[in-house]
Length: 108
Length: 117
Image 1: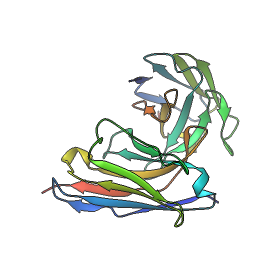
Image 2 (image 1 turned 45 degrees about the vertical axis):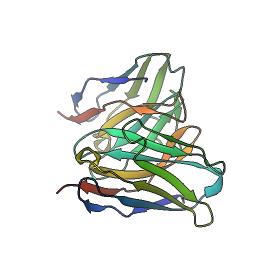
Image 3 (image 1 turned 135 degrees about the vertical axis):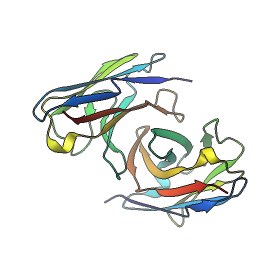
Image 4 (image 1 turned 90 degrees about the vertical axis):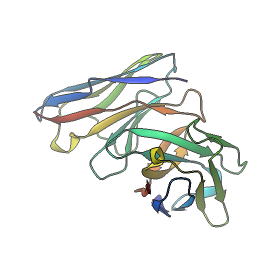
């Protein structure tokens, strides 16, 4: 089973700051990694897939990078609506996939 | 517009059964694999099960294998999750989601399952 770990667990930042979130896989997932945003009371929303491709309608301030076991989600300048929980997900052993435990980005 | 509407959640006693439904619209249902993902209160996301589009192959997380059954009725554009031998640890918000390119692309708003005596 591929295990994903995310760091940090919580990231406290101010609007306008840059956010860097990390996701590490227990073994290589190639580029088969996605990032999701979840706000309180809402379903998750796909942001990034295949490590670096933005999903439809996702603002350009969100970018993904990495391959193999180490991945990063960067939010270049935090907007008020970006404060949320972010999950990574791998699909390298599709149709089985796993999620990371999440990183909460909250307002400093 | 893709829409997914889950229903069927509720309070059930340990050992009981429940069937969840997910009504889909806005896309060609028969062509898309579908999944169930759950989220325990205050916790993260856990993949539960996936069914392929028209071939009806199914896959389950180890935690639900032998207790849950995923199915679909392509004539009704509906996805199901039959849950039996329910445990307290199955308490969660259950989401259905479409699969595009191997990722959970669109999600419903979820249906809450509470397992308690």
